[in-house]
Length: 374
Image 1 (cartoon, rainbow, N blue to C red):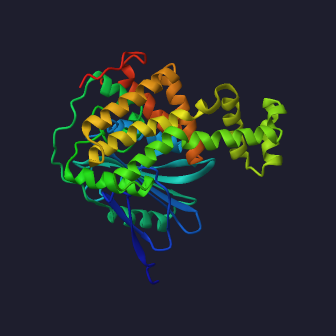
Image 2: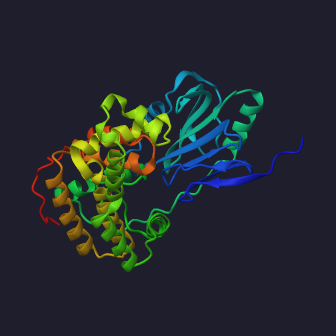
Image 3: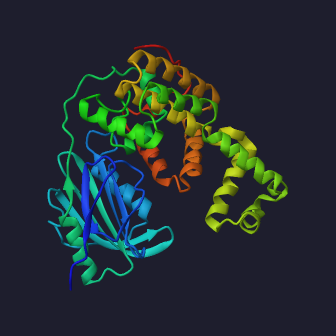
């Protein structure tokens, strides 16, 4: 049999790659250091999760706990494979069952680490037979890591106010493998500046000071909360406002061409909107506003003084608008679900883990006085 042609699948930041059949399709892995893909028929899927050791959510046990939570692992059994992924040390491999959004599949998981990061390699298949296992091992053998050079330049010295401001986007900082105690999440060396510029261009269309200002102005004046309000008002006018809460899911399915999952999500959105208006999701916009300011500092679009002073102004507004870290985070998570059209369970797990960290911004009082202390 002639082997299928293969192609390289790499993480968005280029730090890791694997080889898969050319017919496989890339899936949104959500984070820059992850890889996600599925077979053309959708029966098999692979995910490679990276957690950078200099990040604050980098412990091996944290990675394993996150995988168990997200993929609903059951029937975990050691497989005995130890050298399946070259370059990884302290490896452990398992056969198991995975819950892939309500569909239970066979699973194969490898945990391991390098000097740069901890990893989880996850393969899901309808049937983990001998041929599939052989393919899994071939994918594992193709794994490559291209860790960035670490030449650190002093970052802004952290103060209590800066740590509080960092808390408004610490979940994302952590998911990106960065350090939530540093303004901008990373030391501004040449490697990270280039990666941050690429991210701003790819995700925001920001390439200079003018486009940087445009994105900030959009988040301040509109953001995703504006469209959210328009959608919720549209649903109200279409009759949802007069429907009992218990019947809203059925109403949305029948009258808005929604799947059961979509209807359940929008029923929750609408209930939150009835109570909080645009603030049901507005923290999503404001969190990213502070995040962008810190990124602009890292790449040089804003000076240190400009970025910090604007971040302080936004953070004071955030503090007045929400009553606690939990209230702010609830709004952020619902905003993420509205934007991403998926569960926020993984991000909420990160938030819960960060709350226990000794240097966590979430240990600072929500109502502490935010002052220019840098």
